[in-house]
Each structure stands twice: as structure tokens, then as C-alpha cells.
Image (tube, rainbow, N blue to C red; front, side):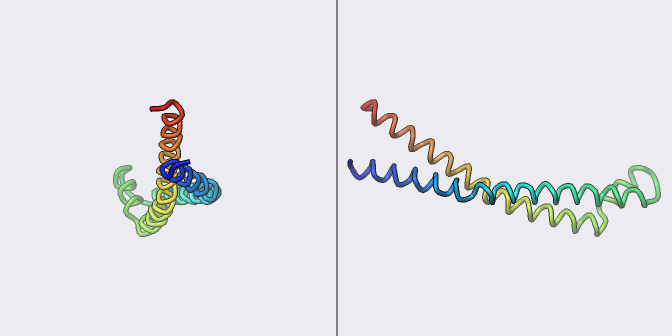
Amino acid sequence: MDRSQTWIEDRASAALKYLAETDEEDASLRMEMVKAERAYKLKIDAVFLVSQGSIEQRKAESRSSPEAETAFSAFASSSLEFHKVHNKRMSQRDALEWCRSLNANRRQGA
């Protein structure tokens, strides 16, 4: 086995290892993001219900309230953490697919 083949196998192994080790973290971070988004929407709805004025005034007040801002900040933070892991997982999947393609080409003599 030549050095390039060894490198390809090592790269594929590293990608598979990362994917296996981050399955639960990815799911957990996704759930935290979904929960934070729901909390943000619920906070907007709660402020809307106690606001006074026209529908548009109530919408504006509920979206710009300190409570909604705090909830949005939590949602944004959880979204960032999820996407950090999720995007790296996507990159690792791409790397794995690239390694598979290289191996398939090698077997065909290309």
C-alpha cells in the first residue's frame, strides 16, 4: 500500500471517528436550539398579549421587548453552537465521500 492510499484511509478513518463521536452532541445541540427558538416565540406571544395599541404596535412592542431580546440572544447562541458542530459534521461527511471517490477511482485504475 502506498503513502497516498494510507493517507486516504487515515483521513476517512478520522472523518468516521468524528461523526461517530459527535452524533449525540449534534442531536443535543439541535434540541437546545429548537427549545430556545420556541422560548423566543413564546416570549414574543406573551408580551403581545399584554401589550396595548393596534396589532402592528403590539407586534413591534413584543418583538423589541427586553424579554424578547434576551430570549433571542439565547436562541442565537444555541443556534451558533449547533451550527459549529453541524457544519463540521457536514465537512467530515464531504471528506468521507471524497475518500470513497478516490478509492473507487483507484480500484478502477483511473
